[in-house]
Length: 364
Image 1 (spheres, rainbow, N blue to C red):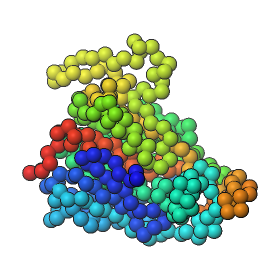
Image 2 (cartoon, rainbow, N blue to C red):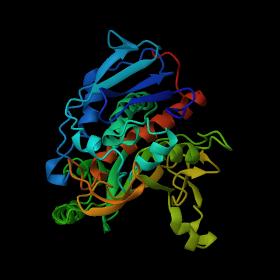
Image 3 (cartoon, rainbow, N blue to C red):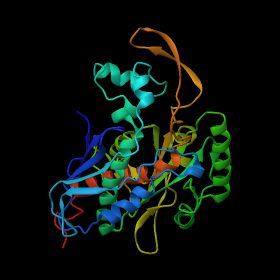
Image 4 (tube, one colour):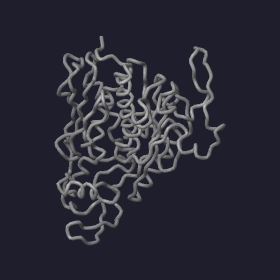
């Protein structure tokens, strides 16, 4: 089974989109970390749908409950179990169209793999709904990484081809919470919002790109060759439903560069630290962190559930059919996925930090 991620900081996901709950078990968190449900809730709130951003009308409050692993406000070293109850699921259409796989979804592949016993409601285990639990784990990981001054932030850089202009770190921090699209470029955010509004009226959907940045990651983090930093990050990020591509630093543009253009020259800063003049490598060399910001970008596909009629098949009668997916679906899930990207980057870096001995097993 593949519901767990990590080795020393290990998360195990459970629950389905329209089941009773979605949750996460975090095993390996050091004892003594001060943590409260309020802190977890602050991250979960960033994943809530924003009506003005073309989000779903499904109104889950995502109230986190910590069931184990925390005593008197501190982690105990035992597995931390967290969940949120599903309180606003509407499964009618999914039951009615049980044998009509939605184009772009995992309905068909899951049906085949599990012999038809999979939970089809809302996509079941394959729904973006399960990422609420990823965010819970990410909140714990971010708190741990804060002990080493490691910070993870993410922002929307593209929706439907509308691209944000590059911004300095200070602007990203300042602007990302100022609009529902979590975009650091206010002008681009307005264009993105207008595009989402137009596409919603067309009964269609949009995808985009999210950039995640990890700051103050020490040099040498990663376990080559198979547990290298970029490989572990890519695995975690590709576990987010709808992510179809991951790149680091200059990414796919390196294919069109010369070595002299792509290499990052070394220098020494005013603090006597080795740095690079540029960061085309995205802060990763040979699968190890270089000490520069770790920069990853993920491509999010357009929401698969759209109200336009699409061709499908009736798996029960084995004949051609058609389907128009009605219901409460995001026109664009990119803004809600920003905090999920942060969470999965934090979880991965936390695991590798523990494996490298950079975090204590007991926090005093």
